[in-house]
Image (cartoon, rainbow, N blue to C red; front, side, top):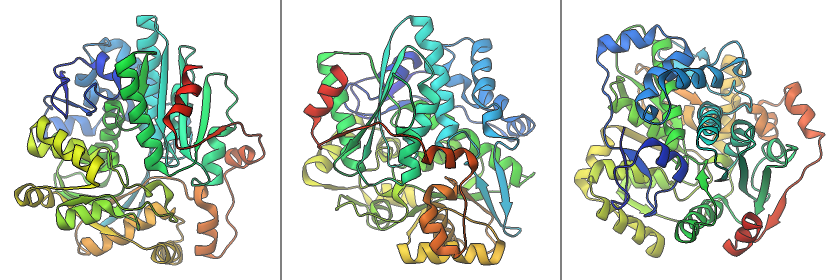
Length: 458
């Protein structure tokens, strides 16, 4: 598999380069130059596989120029082990048309585990093989940080720095990161929002590409392996919900667009997806874009679904590149976004996107109402992000359209909001309750790239 940057300069790279570069040298994101398309006969074969073997079959073409087939199969089996529990993904059937795919059975109770367990084991293998040390840098709006630490910090060849917005993630999300006692883990609270953290990560990559101080790699969904690892649960969920080849829709609460983009790639690979419904909170940049064709950055607002408190959706660049197929155009669009805080696209491209993507947003008050309604009707407790998805999906799809709602995190990560919504006592799982009593360790810095440089280089 050959990869190129969305901005047109960094082209025709192999998987090993893409893995270790993270962000492309021209500031773009890597995408594969081609994708395998699965026929119905091939989909029937995939349907019968267990989860680790499905991961192997769907993703092997992306990696086999760097990792042998036997070794990669071992990595897939090792990535999806007992830490995901008996059911790697459990499902709640609301009625014959509506299903919830619970993507929080992994070690850190969030959907990010699916990609980051795989990424961590791939890093470990490649670093040993190449005999190199690596610094991993990532930003989190909540769940990426703990999943990245759990997946990637096991290697002695890795140092991992995670940036999170100070006082803007839930207590349990923060403590899942800051109570890890490993010498190679560095948690950094930035006085700003998630977009500030994400911008610092991208700017540090640009700085390092120009100066080459360290071997630096990305752990955010700008890393292609993050997308690759998320494709699989779309196929798995589809196979669990239907034994035919009927088109169905996926409803995705999203901020950085990585989860939704993985669904888009799954559709391009032949999975019969009818629509991908983009669900936003009050930070509705994606909803506004799909409505108007204008990508406009506004002030990031604090919400009850903080993992979506984002204004710059990094992975959207990959979708735009797929539409335009022109790196220079993508470079111009994102130059405008960085300097003028907005850009617009041609109506023909917007029309094409709307055939695949639906969209909608939900207020905080309606998020709490949805949590309450789902509990009262089904005795299920859902987290605020899943509530956003369910409400938006119900508005965008008619009652007899089959759909899968992606539940992206365990409700206990947002326990205050959940308690207020269901009006009953809600307990943490024992594993997370223990974390709350542990001591934390993290650095607090200003929204200043020079302060980050001092931390990493020193």
